[in-house]
Length: 122
Image (cartoon, rainbow, N blue to C red; front, side, top):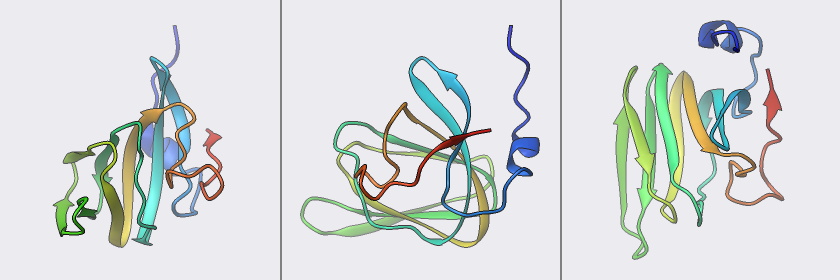
């Protein structure tokens, strides 16, 4: 049986932003922690939803529907949001924010393998 995963300990092992770190696997999904600050790129995932859980800080997820209409959702610690597959979105953090993200293994964080951050395992 595997040991428990201490998310705070894992987050303490790195300082860079927007570089997801895989901390566990679950039914073909990567369980990751990431530190974010500033705006990420607008992107979409055509084949999967995008799961965000705020552990520390605040995250605003800008959303853009097929017609180009924009909206946003803001999350605080303990809150989660799931961006439906195919919806263009742009996560933004005004301060350093810590997230737990769940994605199918191999999903590029920008929606495009050519521009995605390389996921590393902690």
